[in-house]
Image (cartoon, rainbow, N blue to C red; front, side, top):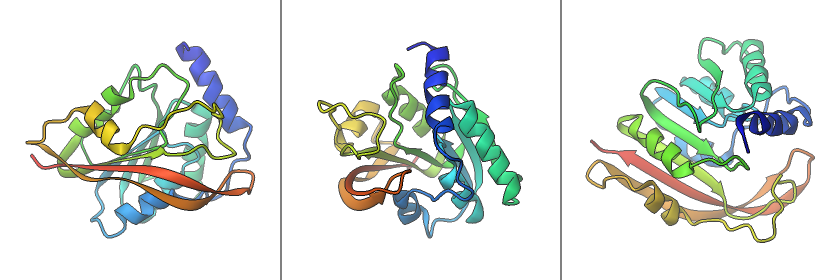
Length: 208
């Protein structure tokens, strides 16, 4: 899929959904980040913007990126509406071609799944290198297919967090895997349906 088609795909996904006035953050984000001292955070694939808004409210300075200009424009408007423009910078990035500048105390990648020809391991490796010492990379992947997912391929495989960590191939002398497991929860989709889903959770901390 070329860049134009990829942008159109995700623009269509977000344009087809009503823009929430106050989108919810991902549960795994709030579980992990609550209690951490706020700093600079990079939100890869910001989507509807719930994570960025929640992080900003906790005192974080957020750089939020998405391939969809619809998602980025909506988040920019939401940040202004909630008085958070000084804490949230939303930018469009195709991660196959560019990566945000800067260093961060936290990088979040929630459900960074896409039909794009994206080298995820390379993107996540770059994200890990963008961490300051002591910073964390939080990767939350689908471990099951929700009824409302855009990808309903019955043969879809969900790599375990340990596999994702192995693919990133970080030097253990400088990065430590703090968590790599699966967890179930009841989730709500954009249309209000609920279902039990599995999340694959990987947390990597930069130690040097």
